[in-house]
Image (cartoon, rainbow, N blue to C red):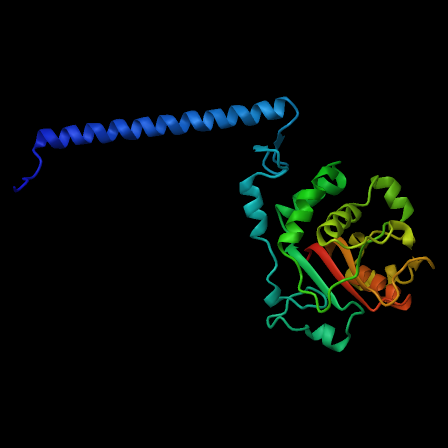
Length: 269
């Protein structure tokens, strides 16, 4: 039996049914989104939900919403275009010309992301606006973009702060990251005061050609620090010139460390 083309009346009926179905589905979606939003708002009102620290939209139980998390991952470093010793630009992914002429003391320096908005805004809130609760989200970002070890590390340590700066800020931002990463990697964490740091002007306030001199001799390793023949993973939040990490790596090697790997959340160009 041949079926002919639908009549105009049948086409109109099909069109009406299609519109009705579309309208119903749209209504269901709006009700779902409304319920989801009300639930998120209820969580915020009851103290169990959060707003994204970057865009202030509802983010459920997370410090960052899904959209901002995706934006941050767009800033991830391309390891194939980075010098493995200083994390600077290197088209080949091999040690850059500067590191070939003057190799730094660290065996590896890896920055997971570029220090640009919105990550720079997030770090500013973390360090200076009392949002030290962001450490878990920042550590997760780092762990999503890890380095490749020449030899697995034996222990984790944080970049120390001077006593004066620690008292002023109230916490060591790198220590919270180091604790989270050490726990994830199931590695021991070197006690924070096993390595001390003398107070000097902040590196960010100085021109690049003065930074190496500014950090010379500022670190001291305690006799009880167990770094001899160890592969030490050093965690910091941001690296710029690499002078501070280089000085600490040099100090640890004098104390007997077999190798020092630097891993930072971001690199400022």
